[in-house]
Image (cartoon, rainbow, N blue to C red):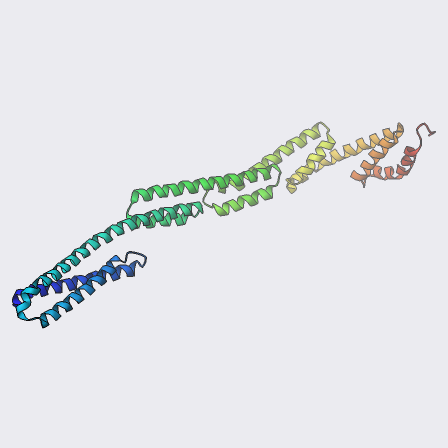
Length: 324
């Protein structure tokens, strides 16, 4: 009779091994992904408990039942065998289910990486975005999508660089139009520190210097034209602007012309002063005299004007038509 029922005992061994295998696989899955599926672990626990209970029950029944009643208990043994087969089927289905879950999580992971790449793009962290794309390509092997994302990152970075350069270029242009050359150079140096490999940015200091030289050349031309037409006031105003651009050698070469301009202006003011005094235009004489003293304080005529100022102011204060 033992030989007849020995296959049932072999089923218990098989069920025990499979139950333990399910339990071990479940433990490994939970250890690797604590937030993942616990279904396999639960199935393993239930399988082990069911096999232990059914095995102990079968042993107890076989140890205590009379041989005459074995035929009566045979249906129970067959039922336990069916339970073991059902547990095996459950484990196989669980393996398929876990595979489906793994595929679903794989797509979620890929979508999470895509979102992370675009978040880094929003923060203008191009290197971090490229590293995430590399991770995606290694994990999922999608070279086409990785190539597309890299192009998107490159285009976004180039567009951002162009906008920054354009903004700073506008500031530099404003400084150059205001002849604030040092401020323009400082802005260019900041941009070079940000984009040292950009050729357009590296050329900015040279462009600023070219603008400065062009402006200097224009001032020199305007000054020579004013001198040629004897516009002494205009030439002196231009000379004040040129003073910030001239080298020592250039200033030395212009000294004779500059002295001539100032001498001519002083002579003109002296003539205006004398004419105003002669024609008894006292207010005009005082105005021109003040200009001579202010602009040419060390000139001999300035001393003469100072000496006559009190008398001129007294005459200007007299009523109109008073005797000279």
